[in-house]
Length: 240
Image (cartoon, rainbow, N blue to C red; front, top):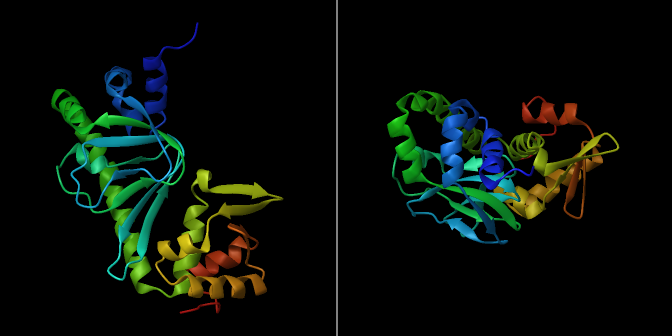
């Protein structure tokens, strides 16, 4: 017998590490309220300054979190893929969004109203004790990333960003034993942030030293150990 929509939603929600702790009864409640939404490429889900009404879980596709800079450039804070969630702060506080969220490709998301989640916590206050450590860790990781970007040389920031991208399976592929990341130099520059010219110069130096290879939007990591040394600041391949 084919599974009905609610059963599928429960399985999808159960894939989220945070929600997996809620138990089947609560997940069933959430599944009934969750809406499957198709989001076309370049659709803005949340704008800087909005008060988000929903939390989202990505089933398929990619959503980019970014902040406009004063010089007109864009700082890409994170690219999220299948299994990731965002706007979780709406679980506890109503505040203006501090970044934009937009689809990079055609995507499918589960959308749950924040007001509904608030009612879940009213009925099950013990769940808050499970959610708060998760959000605190996410906040800590975000702070670490910003501090790292602000205080280190371009080579260190770029190497750290590439290594972080390898930790997200939706961003990478394995080709002949080497990790390949599909990303443009423009997007890499926006993640650091730095100029595209400086990123290109650093990548060309790394290619000369056989650390990485870049070709038409695809970056292959040839020597992960050496790249890790750069990220830790131990290598002489430090470019400002």
